[in-house]
Length: 542
Image 1 (spheres, one colour):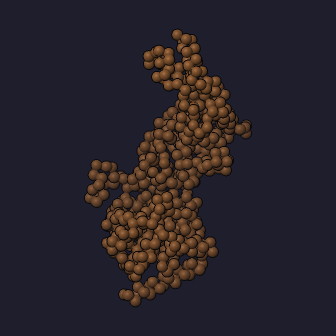
Image 2 (image 1 turned 30 degrees about the horizontal axis):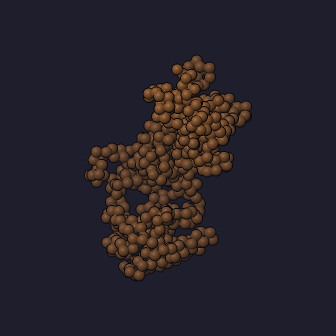
Image 3 (image 1 turned 135 degrees about the vertical axis):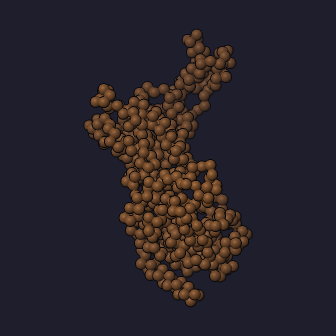
């Protein structure tokens, strides 16, 4: 047995050398940089100490860190697999070197933060695990539906066999500097391909969340999905909404909850990740694989929903939404705002016109003068809030999506079209663009994407209202002396009541608004001027 194991190790080593010799010079350079990092960076000093304490140990970097290293992408998430050392010994060894947390005994995974890691370093805690095999118990597609066998003597190839996609099933052995790639992950990486390890049907049936994960990788890496993997994905997507019959193991923690095969929070993370990296491709993929119809069927009503051709020569509401998402990725958007669209803005843009099909009125059917969507902003805001709540989009901390912000933005995305911009009150500008400057900027960004996503039949500019608002905002900032924030009100309600000797009433609010309008216009700048104004105003209103 020992002789066979030795031969197997030697064969794997030579196979790895052949693979490395076939690599591009750029990929070799990236791997050398990885070796340099692992050997010299103090965060990874525990590896040398581990080899010294356990000469028989084999240490592998596995998963996304290997994939991202080959792609030349920055990674902050390092997962290690340790062979020939038990979990108990590993835990005892690591405790003097940093903070150790045993995630789960049956998983054999330790979360480790070395003492050497500085507070300002944004590395994730290291996952340090033993090799394991996983078997789906009932093939429910639920991530908890697994029988797990952890064994420090298992071969690296056996552990890699349980991984989802070939590009994630590579391992870098630290000591020998060899790449283990039993399932062709490197070739798929070079060919920009997402391929399931082994049988795709089986991989997805084990854990249905792998389907939305595949789409997130396709968007973030700009890879295609391999044919057999794509067929299995399309076949299994209806299972994303499966609700399970409680089993003893699954229901122990969730006896009172609906048990979903794929929890909303898991879908939310993959959904947001896909749209963050490539919103247009994400929309196309989620649509092509039928997932929009499963998760957000309300969006499908935008297809073949007509729009006035003079303002929307681009086509139906779906096409307009797609073009608006495209704008967020454009050079013109980056030039206009000097930053990329964040996830919250992308999701807002996806939903901004969702209310149109539900408020549609046509001359033929409803006798109106033209195609109308009266109130679609308000209806769309309500629908958007319900959908985002249903999908638990705010549950994913890494993307910082606030459902209330999205609802507000959808509700007011027509502000530029419904207002006479030159005559807009300063207090109105303050309310929408400066009370929450970050949200105000997002509203302007949304209006820009919405306008650029339209095509006028006469070929004219779709940015007229947007440009007028930019000029109005610039004038407002100048007259109101806005620097980083708006100047505070000169007088508050209590002072106004004291000066005028009046009691609380609607009149106080009216005076406050009028005074603020004068202050923001630059006509009032001192308390003396403010007191004179409110006294005069009060006499007029008696």
